[in-house]
Every structure is written in C-alpha cells, then in structure tokens.
Amino acid sequence: MKWKDVDYTPYTSTIALAPEEESLRQEDFIQKAAAVVREMSEKAGRVPTACVVTFGCQMNARDSEKLCGILSRAGYMLTEDEEADLVIYNTCTVRDNANQRVYGRLGHLNAMKKQNPSKKIALCGCMVQEVQVIDKIKKSYSFVDLIFGTHNIYKFPELLYMMLTSDKMIIDVWKDTSSIVEDLPVERKYPFKSGVNIMFGCDKFCTYCIVPYVRGRERSRDPKEILRECEKLAADGVSEVMLLGQNVDSYGKGLEGGVNFPGLLREVEKIDGIRRIRFMTSHPRDLSDELIELMAGSEKICRHLHLPVQSGSSRILKAMNRGYTRESYLELIGRLKAAMPDLAITTDIIVGFPGETMEDIDETISLVKEVGYDNAFTFIYSPRTGTPAADMPRSMSDEEIKEGFDKLLKVVQDTAKLSVAKYAGRVEEALVEGLNDHDPEMVTGRLSNNLLVHFKGGADLAGSYVKVKLLENKGFYYIGEML
Ligand code: 5AD
Ligand code: SF4
Image (cartoon, rainbow, N blue to C red; front, side, top):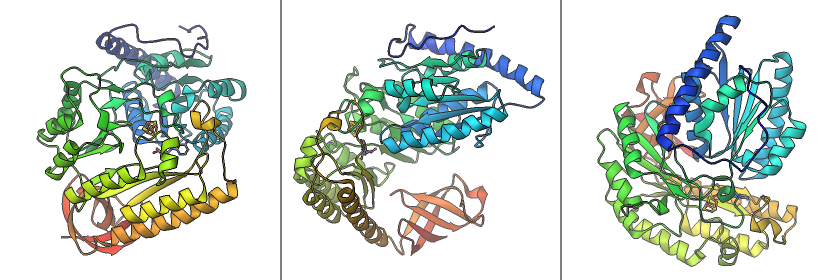
C-alpha cells in the first residue's frame, strides 16, 4: 500500500489518543514496519542497515537511543556508516554552526543516494522545529524522505512505516505538546550507564536561547515512571544514571504530589544496583540549599556539577534574562564549595552577546579565575531567529569578539589545568567505559567528578568499578594505573 502525499502542515497536530493507547498504536506500526523491512531483506538478500547521527546535547543523544531501539525492533541492523540504507540526522539548532554542518553533510548524503536510489534520508530534532529550515529543505534538499520534530518522536514507528511505503517527502512537525508518551523501545549505547529524561522543554527564555521555542514548555515526567525506568535499567545491568532535563532544578513544577528535584533524587538513591547518579543541566537561579545538602551527604550522587554561568558581568546577565548576578552566582559557588570541597564544577560561557564589551569579557575572565572551573565550554554568540537577543544591537566587531574569545579560552585552559592538577597522586574509583579509542591496550574510566583516566586494561573491564591511581596529568584527563 502507498500512502498519499502528506501535506506540509507544521505546527498543527497534537496527540489525540491517551498516551497509553498511543504507545500501543505505535507498537502496531513497529510490526508493520518490520514486515516491510523483512520484505526488503528478502529482496536484497541482506539485512538493511540504519545509521543515526546525533548532533548536540545529551537530550538528543537519549532521543537517538530511542530511535535506534525502534529501528532495531523493526529489523534494521544498526551501523555508524552513513552509506547505510537509512540515515537519520538528529539535529541541533542551539548555534548556527550546528545547522551549517547538517546542510553540508546532507550534500554528501545526496551524492550517496544518487549511487543507491533506494537509500532513505530522515531529519529530526531541534533544527527542523524552525519553519524557515523546513522551507529551505523542501526547496533545496528535496531528496530528504522524512522530517519530524522533537514533540512527536514517539510517533517514529508510524512515520517510519509511512516513509517506507511512500515516495513523497513526509513532514510531521508539531509546535508544542503537553503529553509524554512512555515505554518506547530503547537501544542503549552503553550497557552499564544510561540517560533518563526527567523533564522536557524549558520555560526560562534566556534571551539568546532557541530551546524554549524548539523544545516547548517545561513538562516534568511522573516520578513513578522515572523510578520504574531506573529500576528496569538497574535490573538490566545499568549502574550509572544521568537524569536529563534543560533545567533539572525546577523538576516537579506542575506535578501533583509536590515532588521536587531533591525528592526525586532521594527516591533514585534508594534503588539497589544504581551506584552513581548524575544530572544535567542545573540553573544557578533554581539550585536549592536542599539539593546542596543532599549532594553533600550522598554516597551515590556524583561529585560533579555543570552550572552554566554564561557571563561574569551582571549587566550582560540581566540582558540575557538569567535571573542572577555575578555576585549571587559567586555566592552560590561559595556555598557549594563549603559543603563539598571536592566538587568538580564545569560551566558554559557565551562571548559576543549583543551589547557586550571587552570590559564585560574581562569580568567573565576574572570570574573564571575566581571559581577555578574544572572545565568550561565557551561559545561565540550566535543570533537565533525569533529570540529577543537577535534584534539587539551588537557592540563589538567579529575581530574584537574573536580576540575576547581567545583571551578567555586561554584562561579557561590554564584554570582547568590547575584544577585538574590537584587530583595528581590520588586513588579514585573509576567506572570503566571501554577500550581506549587510540590504544587497544588501555581502557578509559570515568571518575565520580567526571574526569577521564586512561590506564592499562582489557575490554573485559567495561562496566566495572576499579581503583585507579592518577599518575600523569594531561590537562583534561589523566594517565593512571589500576590498583
Ligand atoms: N549562541 C551561543 N551559545 C549559545 N548557547 C545557547 N544559545 C546560544 C547562542 N544563541 C550555549 C549556552 C548554553 C549551551 C548549551 O549553549 O552556553 O548553556
Ligand atoms: Fe536555553 Fe536558558 Fe532554557 Fe538553558 S535555561 S535551555 S539557556 S532558555
């Protein structure tokens, strides 16, 4: 059966069935897609391959695991080779260079498709939530077979089936949703660690950020569902979970029963088999004393906090709508360090925000030195269509911004080296993640504070916790020795 061309109707649909019924309906489409994939296998004399490429953040990485889970169930063999019969780009649009990379790589996929006309190409994720992106794809990248957004990823089985039985470009992108559909199959990248979504969307509306527009309003998952997922993961051999949300500290808003983020963490801590708990991302405005106290007393919550500061200038923070000042951020850092002297702190920083001057960047540099971050991710401001900052006048030239950025980067690197140096000689517990990419005689382990350590060992250690002595500081990682 061929499906009719699906009209481009972005920003209309919303979930019609109850989430439980919807998940059964999608299960049905997995079976239907599997029948088509079986037919393809028989015809070609081999199992069709699928490749999911993830751009952007941990939330996207987790979404990709859901896509892989569905593809596996439908009978595809997963590969990392983009020559695959089906390639899905799970895109990011936080900065324009992420978009440009996707457009560039789509050109290569088109060349491959010319060699193999039955190749299918799909796009999903944040980038396609922007109307102008869809228009551009329709006009200049008409070889794309399927486009779907961030809100209806649970509908992927249905969309996959439609794509496999149609020659037309299928587009299904929603503006927003209030629903959360549970129980999608997942194919985890690691057997021993996993991300767990605890909330979706963001209500903070930082003036530079497109996330609230492409990921929608903040919605927290029911704590019972989160705990059920964590318990299932633990039973399946997962010992480290990373609780994921754009702003985990405001978890629970709008849910019945008054659960908050520390309350959720306390419940996750009780699960046997879960040895490490991480979370991402925190917001300085919402991080509570209750959370600090809980972390300080916890055996399971890791000694790492990613706390984006974005700028060290109160004037710029105000223009960014961050809801805190340089002083209140530093005061929060003081409370964190007093409670947990061994806490590793990392951050995100934007340079070149509209109205920013070299004096503001100098304030950021002085804040970086004062906090002594273990690492900082630095970004050049990228105007995003539809955000308030995109209309604000800029005050520095590209050259000046680059100069400020390089100055900051040097300080960030020097500070990180100093922070990391203090771990030299320590014996720490590492969770072995697998063989080292560059040296097959070595494995890579992650410490509670998120630092990586490479040491001699074999693939059989993957997933185990071992004691490692940190010997040689390589800047952002260590060479160590297993005891
Ligand atoms: N330009 C540059 N960096 C941005 N970020 C978010 N939006 C933008 C933008 N428009 C950065 C912030 C955020 C990280 C995920 O990406 O630092 O914390
Ligand atoms: Fe974007 Fe701000 Fe929300 Fe983070 S908190 S996702 S930077 S709007």
